[in-house]
Amino acid sequence: MIAALDIQVTKTAKSKINEIDFNNLPFGKYFTDHMLEVDYANGEWQKPVIRPFQNLSLSPALSAIHYGQSIFEGIKAYKDRDGHPFIFRPYDNFRRFNISAERMMMTTVPEELFIEGMRRLIDLDRDWIPMKSDYSLYIRPFMFATDDTIGVHASEKYKFMILLSPTGPYYSAPMRIYVEDKFTRAARGGVGFAKAAGNYGGSMMATAVAKKRGFDQVLWMDAYEHKYVQEIGTMNVFFVIGNKVITPDLESGTILEGVTRDSAIEVLRQEGYEVEEGPVHIDDLVRAFEAGELKEVFGTGTAATISMIKELQYEDYTMKFNTDTWKAAPAVRRILMDIREGRRADTHGWMFKV
Ligand code: COI
Image 1: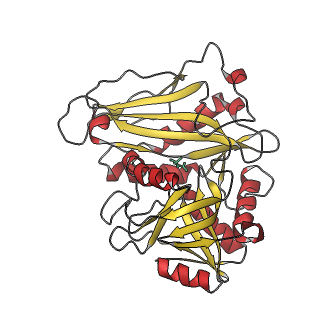
Image 2: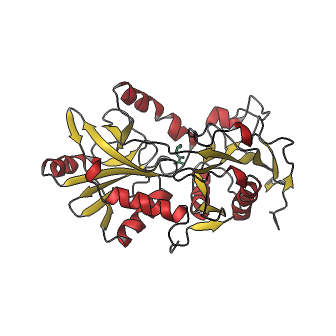
Image 3: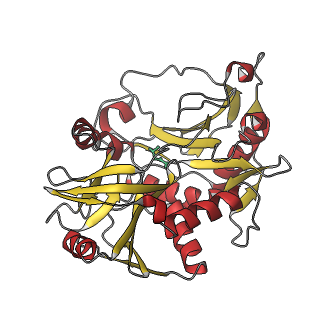
């Protein structure tokens, strides 16, 4: 165990920051000057290091590569109007990270290592946090198994790392979504609630097929009946029906417990919307659409923030929406952006000062 977080810091000899066009930041393409790295071995966490961003040298027998013990998180840092850096809800991602670790039979990461390690790294690379609205510094903590034997068992060694990537909006335009009727993402008893790397690998074929048909992403349905809505690609999903907002509940363990999902629920309730978490049946959505009651559909996620859905394709039935007239999704988007960028008081205690 680490008493007070002692980090060995090696700074880069030459910053890359002037090579980056901060007006053009595709998601995940650029990384800051430094990264955090720490190994777990012999039953304990070793001394963390912050060093220049660089390649790793790893055994080809690395168990994460062979058996998939690999998890990650997505968090964002912003600057307020005075240029002070803040991280949005890092403790919630920390909690979820260790839930993922436990499900994948991996060691957990101490709070101080996760939070203080992240804070120190961001502090060092604070000049990389974009000041432009809707832009941010995306934080990618991740951990993978580093045993170098190919026996199938939970690894005894792990590497935990944090990378930082300045980024613009993930999806910039309202999206066309295909309601997935063949592939599934997660079943009860599986790892759907964990941010396990394999969940993303397993979803790529469905997304590729949908993209070939002209859609941006898929809306996952439950694994048994293909009737109950789960989540969209990299986002949780919300529907405004009449005056109520509904979103799939987390009881099945097949849906990621999104931090932005939780923030959206709180903001919507504060704005006077009734929000219901429960099973969402596709036939009920179609009926509501036909009755003119299905008013808005939107996704929530750290990378995606709040993304409006302009079209849902269910089998041969198309539901189209005019997003210009929407109220709930734009309100949540604006309020969250204002809190994150320091234009609105953070009454929830979501912003963690670096
Ligand atoms: C996020 O929203 O942070 C994600 O992890 C989704 C995706 C970019 C993998």
